[in-house]
Amino acid sequence: MKLDRDVVLHIARLARVELTEAEVETFSTQLSDIIGHFDVLNRVDTEGVEPTAHTLPLRNVMADDVSRPSLPRDEVLALAPNTEDGYLRVRAVLE
Amino acid sequence: MPELHNLTIHDAADLLRKREVSSRQLTQAALDRIDAVDPRVRAFLTVTADRALAQADAADARIAAGESGSLLGVPAAIKDVLTTKGVTTTCGSKMLENFVPPYSATVVQRLFDAGAVMVGKTNMDEFAMGSSTENSAYHVTCNPWDLERVPGGSSGGSAAAVAAGEAIYALGSDTGGSIRQPAALCGVVGIKPTYGRVSRFGLVAFASSLDQVGPFTRDVRDAAIVLNAICGHDANDATSAPVETPDFTADLERGVEGMRIGVPREYMPATLDAGVRARVQAALDALAAQGARVEYDVPLPSTEAALAVYYIIAPSEASANLARYDGVKYGFSYQQGASMWDNMEHTRGLGFGTEVKRRIMIGTYALSSGYYDAYYLKAQKVRTVIRREFDAAFERFDALVAPVTPTTAFRIGEKTNDPYAMYLNDVFTLPVNIAGLPGASIPAGFVDGLPVGLQVIGKPFDEATVLRVARAYERTAGWASQHPPL
Image (cartoon, rainbow over the protein chains, first blue to last red):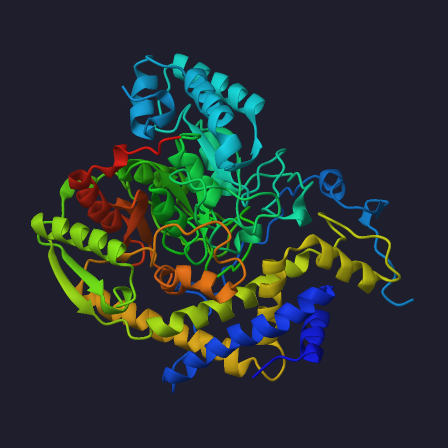
């Protein structure tokens, strides 16, 4: 199974990653090759087996509902390219 | 006495305590060594000389006031995947080229509280994705034993720095072998603790169910000393395990008399490099000679599926984790696009390197509508099967012993055009992350002048046994005192 150009572009769109023309070309071949190796999973019988999301016997770790100091807002916002009145500024989603 | 830059942590701590050497001298020796060899090794992305000397002076003041501590005043290197307050943290990516974090990772803060001196931040594959450090957006790091070969990855800078005498120890991170594989290829000790043993707060996320921080050191005792400092519950990491941290140095010298050691069949395939096989066999013979009951051909049949499980789960988690790099909050930001989406796609297209994009693509594909059950859910179920096979093995054995890598260090550029060949480097290490187990790499000699690593795998939260087996081998082998001719 080869991932054609349209599938590669669709996945890139879902991931919001711009690809160069050369990357579209090499990924089409390489991703097909890598995904082809995933077929080995079908050789493992997983009938009735529960999935593992992580390996610790932890569930719903709760924190006490009390306020704690956070990082200073000006230090955090200083990392952003655009801010206004103590907020992150972004371009309009709908234009 | 060995040269100051080649001391172990415990030897350095002894000298500091006896006031035979100062932290400033140790730190200056490490900085001088960096000046002398790093133009060739290129282990560091950032050298923090002024900060290091200030930390050294602070440590010397604490020592003068009567304080002692196993890490107090000892110079260390930190992988650039861990946030360091006020010091650029790039993660090996152009995306974070100018990122100066406003806080330090819990593990870094714990080292600083113990009086550690940070000499710099080490090179790595971008976002820890790679097995050779060739995926760094900045430069390639060279193996100190042969500068034309890779140091392994993704923590190649940390491994090379310790091997080359540029820091007495280092921190790295291991998602599929990124501590153990470079430790093996550079001839130093590396350990990936049990998942949950060490806080991930401030560890830039790659695959959150697999990532774990651990040390690179020159001997096993040093690894135990660093683990003592960095392990323990952290309320800032919800996956940090609420378990006690034992003194990992306590049982180091107890030996392996009567211990049951298994050798997984699938980790000694016919295709294993003959030189690596011979070194691993010699190590097993040495453990048997010390009274360990070594049994071969232990079945872990789903090992052949582990690579696929890993290359579905890790990229899937990465595709979600790396969604945060949107050019809005911090990091590289493309601003000249026609729309918000245009800016975001260009930010990510220009900010990420090829391997990172490749993994985001694999993960997005595996999680996309129509493929989720066939790939992601199936991989999670096989993950359960792999865990159960380890559980069954650990009903019969105290530890498993295997090679770390199928070969010694390969040449720079040899595998960069074949991602799948590169992924095969981690075939013996990534099952340990999938099962959340502790695993160490111990120097096990050389093949044609290149180091070989011996892997010791333990039960969950049984790092003590891993270290004890590692130390028993190290004591007879004597590789810890070998240094590369630079």
